Length: 529
Image (cartoon, rainbow, N blue to C red; front, side):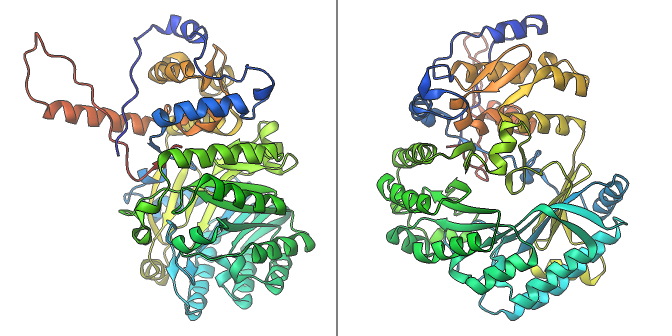
């Protein structure tokens, strides 16, 4: 689908721009100053009503900004030599690290899934994979010199608990051999409640995991059949109870709205069942139906997908349910209990984003291990080979299995800081940014401020000379706010407009009008709402 390019505002000089923006008129939608319903930064009744009114116009395709530039900008010109230099630069600046380990195997295919996975019931394949995973860790760690502290580690997939006990021990032993996993750090693993019992939960606790993330998606029987993932509330509760009993610090659950056969009433019933288990964190993801990208999604009956209005009802109802139950709306699709580390970090202005979403430890270099894993090291992004053959082949030659990557420049890092501040903590301190970056914000981001004024008029942001603040309404559409500062999207829109103008039929210059073309919204991105 395509989305219209933001309408430009009349140009203004740098000397008048901040004054014009700070007095940009009263926003037409709720800005968070409308009384008790919208106090603080949480989206109250007024913000949800205004969100519903704006959703149709704002619902365009856009990135999730777990990195900037986003992963679709990575390129094959970045290779192993570039990664080795990044590791050398990282070694020269010793600081704690974050680790991501990708385990791609699953026994069952879930039709909605867009992850890089391998469907198999042959557990012999995982033994070979672990062998190569350990080799990759050794190669990367050797470039870092001294054994580095790790404040955050995460095993994702696929299904990490596909590995048997011996394989999990071997991976964890390798991690401990090459890195110092701090016990006070966050060490999490994604688990499938259908494949984990008390013994496996006890093993995870013994191995040092202190956080677990459970895939739920939906408890409704018809929805589960439609997505080929049948999972009872009872087996999910058994895992949650085991995690509490074993002393895990945090239990997180993932839900997905927009799946086939879902309705607002059915999803509300699922949310009630989830609330009964009181997870510490909740992620409520919007299903992105991209069958041209993810082949398993071709098995989903598109006629059974909820209409746009129904999907919006599900989202609005879920936000209302969760906030009424005491959860803090962190942003985008994340919720947490008030005493959870994510909520605390946001209140203290320390929240950040990385490839796992919102995080309290995102400022550290992250090493990625396993097929398709992504790392962020010394200002570079690096992604591993996507297939086992390519991954094994590189390691057999003694090289790191780099497929593509990206070396950021100062402008990328500046924009990443701006996007991160708005998405994570809802406030950008312009004066502080100018001091750190040595820029005049109004001049440097002139085009962005013009576009942002439109969003201010819609009530998504407040713009003042010294700060930009995302309103409660804006937090519900924060991806749309962040997109304003994405120079790559802006360049895409410019090229699309030029191409459309070049293809337009010739017209009399005296009577012709400027061509205004919509920018093609990349179908690789999910919808903002």
